[in-house]
Length: 293
Image 1: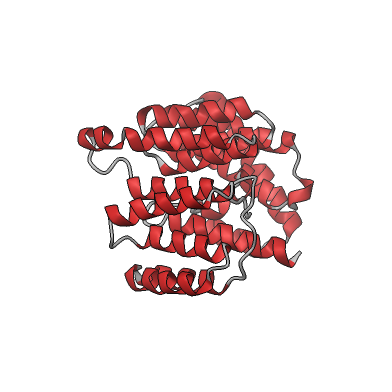
Image 2: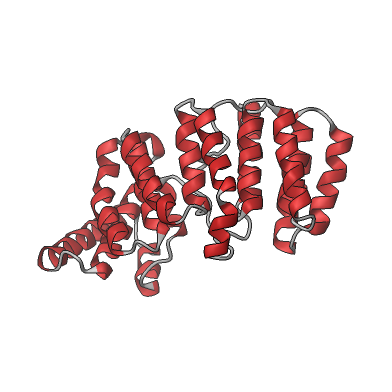
């Protein structure tokens, strides 16, 4: 149990490093509401004073209300968001072991509509892909990720999700190919839309896939390329420090952790210091990204 927990902590820290400055990490659909601000603060405060049973009853009432609105106005985005939020909250009230595919299925329809109505907001499509993956619809999940990457090839949440999906299918070469293709096209994409592909973050993600397959030389080489590209970016420095730590090279790792901490903004220093103290564990073979929640 202790080794499993340590592996989870190491993976979480690496994902934080990969996606620093970019946005929310890919999270399971069950925990989505934790990162969704409530639409009405007064309502949220009221819920907090209710018993779990009363909260469930109130949320079920809200769901019925939003469904009635959507019968009249199928594309009412306020109602769609409210319905999604209420259903996610109901899911959040259940223990993870109690959640069945049919429970997750109820969030797919509003997510599909919101993704279609808001093609520029990839969060809905990412959540849609995660929901489909969790009910076993891997092809549907892949299609949702591809729909984002077709227009936003550098979208890190979509890349992270697609890589996680491929790794869960034991397809590391496909994950590596996707990331290498993204890097190959990065210069052109950034010429068309400056900053659309965070090449350093993609390189760190690529290195993490190599590391998950115990291809330490390849991982180290990718991290070195990222460090050379932007010597002031702490992410590849931290990722290489973690790689060295995994290999038992504690002294070399410490030097890089110290360097990463010096380079990182204040809000990430605690994460780096925590990574430096976590006991090294073997690199996982299944996936470079966790589903912690």
